[in-house]
Image (cartoon, rainbow, N blue to C red; front, side):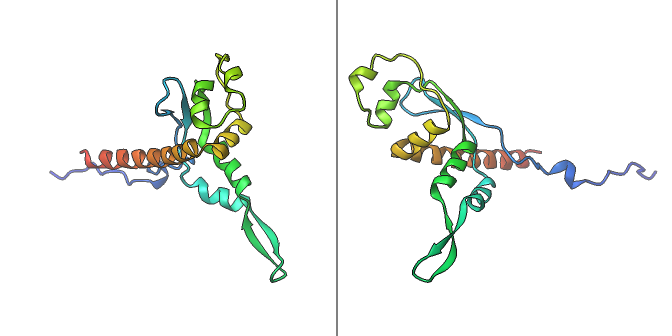
Length: 156
């Protein structure tokens, strides 16, 4: 007897993950018991941000316009995307990340420091440790997701 059941053909729009973004993940900042950042990988957004932050400028040497990356604009787009939120950033943590104006006065503050666009930018610009860490986290999340997909493909 002939097998009459046929497998239905695969449709790409049903099997390709077309989501533009991956879900953000909470990542604890090393050495802090409270500070953690809700972050997501840069992924395909990098090219979009470079294009959005590139502007024409006059090159005075050649008297021609050329395209130049506005690094401040790129950094703001990057941070708005990559750092979704944070929790638990205290003055004690901040002291490990950047120089503070009046440590003794600030040390009495027991609350958290909020996350907003200006705070993200200041931390990235004035803390090489935080800047390096957040870039590494973005890459690690992408690598983790890629490895997880590879492992899922290997399983029968």
